[in-house]
Image (tube, rainbow, N blue to C red; front, side, top):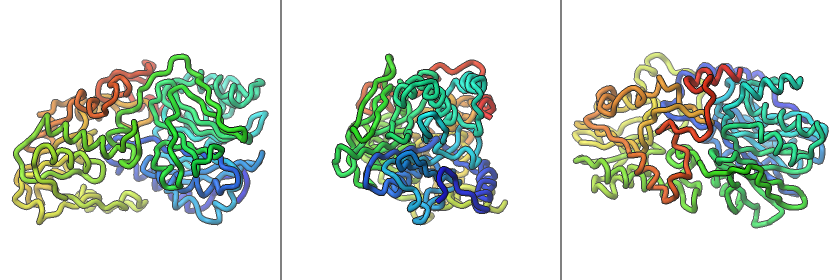
Length: 499
């Protein structure tokens, strides 16, 4: 392992090229930005614990992965394109020594799918290096980038994450310590950001003032001197850590050999957790608001059955995220639950392009209908969302080809009508099918016998929480952080602003 360097190999360059080629084959779903992980645990193998933490967070991003560790003032870094288990080996992890670490697994919504944009982002300061892992999106990138360039910072990536790191470096270089310098930089950032940061002295965890993206805090072996940060609690389960609490909106936690300190750096914190974390993004075994997301998704399905039951023979979900809602729908509707689709869980992990014939066959690459279950049946298929409608149309055709005589689709969220600017890839508004078509028109386009979405009120009711505690801008257009006019009309403009 070479200190302070990312891996280079012919394989990584080939994967980088092929990942770009695969962009047209991405799922017809909202895509999460990334997962972050941080750990302070002297005398533990922090690199290997970070590896397994990222492994549990792999669903949040599959384009690149990285881990940075500090051994006193020496930084060790490895990051590359690919899945966590492709990027790291035992030999690589053994070279990542130290008592603290941060890690990242990425799906790019800012910048492009290039190795240079893999995280953690590392920059130099007068106090030493800082390694930053970021989940979210800033909405003031044009302004912040201009400010940093005027301050003579040489931005080498196309990500807003690097901008945050340089903003911290600027404050530290002007005389601030790690905590005050970071807080000074955070006040320059607008948008969604959950951060795990490593310095020679300790690890920080940060959430934006609205808490749009998640971040949780735990301890290793219930030891109050060994702390863990992660995007979701499932990363704690895999390494035997114990969940303590969420990092609060507008909070910075600073973990050093002296223990944990908390700073509420924002004067106007609110709770606006992204509702899609509840519906789709986070793993069903992760805990939010003291219950598993599996339980919440069951509730979505139950509410969906109350609002839009239908006379049918069987109900099943689109694997995997639609399954809990389908079970909940069955419990209330009385429609028998069955498995109608089998998912190929690894087809999306290949860098090999499908043939033209395979592309034309469409959905069967990832989902294969069970003909003996579907033949002659009136079916209800439950999914968590429809974005462009392209996958839904192929899926309905595959179900009819397998013998279903009626296909009724139920969606366990409201229609997605607005793009997200806070770290979710939801396409431009023009590409969102529900932004331009009525429910009846969508039903006709995807060729179902009936289509119904869960109501916005029903979606929030199922949380059991204050309905004001969530960001649901993708359903309503009510953005909790103001989007500058020059980027509000088009996601494409946002992407161009960050290149």
